[in-house]
Image (cartoon, rainbow, N blue to C red; front, side, top):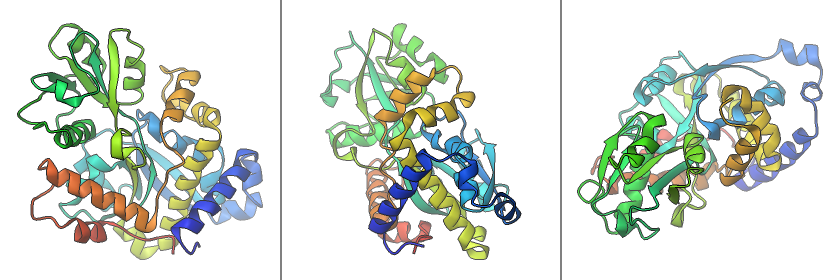
Length: 335
């Protein structure tokens, strides 16, 4: 156990540093004894999301075993509502996903609690070089943006960014849905002047000489804002809080280990994303903030800020109180 978010950060850094030079077997601390005490847990994730690369690292580095867990990964690509329902009903014990995708359905009352943030970064807004669009976001007025999901986190985030720069994201900008891998083609054909999505695809799209990166979810005041969060089944918190604590710590440690050794993480994730070479994965992970994994009050503050942002663009209800809402969806498992 830890006494505060600040102490937790120091502890995690020390542990991650040790893990970076340890073999998976050395983390077992007595193979037979540890194996006998492992608690089985099912963790839902999206194997297409490169920013979740620290999850397979937690397996290959033995971090889950170190914390007494036998974790089964469930690759979940359905809707967020279905994912949260799967966690709430016990089909999975926990999951990791984007705050800007989870906060709206969590408003509906799923029995899922957030225990910590993992990292920032991985959403990107790219534009055609010849579209007259610059980093002055007012230049997006009258433009069309291609996105794979009209309710996705990229649409939500860049709508917030537009709103804060004086644009109405629903009236001044047109959003048009396309299959994710066809987003650059939509821009090339002139059906859209820009595109928004997440890594690893947007990292690959950046290599297109006709596209330029305009903004990310680390732009402006969001430079130190978490984007992905850990969600745990309410029943697990009530019946076995120590397992929820162990899972949270293992995931946070895996992100800190990533910030110390990006290549090791890229190699662990590569089997899930073979279309992106390891060097690209390393550079991509370096562009994220895997050393920023808030818990406790700092994490709650970031969630409250996101709740206020989502109210600003009419995603959360106007009647939702951000403070009370975050108190309801957050669970402190580290004190």
